[in-house]
Length: 286
Image (cartoon, rainbow, N blue to C red; front, side):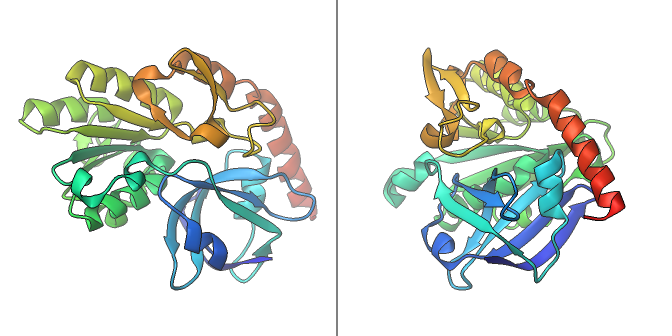
């Protein structure tokens, strides 16, 4: 059993939990994910590692309530425990396999959309701790949906906030903010985008126009975490790849985003129906 050490609602639908998992914390690296099962009858769902504390023996997950399983996880309270937390799974970020000498002189721009801010945090932190120049663009539709502002500000050189409606920071999309920074003389050797699939698609198109290499995380395609279900299949560089076991991070230039967007939307109607049933069940009492 994996006890929930702390729980915090970052927004009405986004929850951060610190979970006791010493072995996972000891092995975790930026870019990897966990499979979480709330109880013995629950579905396993993939959640990117948002932080890890090797000394405390804990891992941090951030969950957005968008379906039955995520709503079930968020319903748990501090002191309760999940039946299973398995990991770390997936391939760590490319820079984890590079030496400190290779990283020096690099300049990273992270583009975090919505809940994507949570997995951006450990990556920015890792690089910032090694003295690498790191800027972050944090975007959301409105100011009340922005998360991890203070955390990201503490692990980067510059944090640029933007909202679609202009309620905080730059008024516009993250792609417009990136173009603005480059036009003002910013120079980046690598971009990393994590967030909604459509955001990553247009971030990639913008990065290509600006001639900045870009890595994207396809964690939103994952289901079983092993590649066996096939839900995470995506075409990368003309080849079929599995986000669970070969990713979740890939070269954005090579990802077939249109295919990925179609695959992501396959089960939306079934998920909405399941979530409504879950809400009714909770209303009547479990």
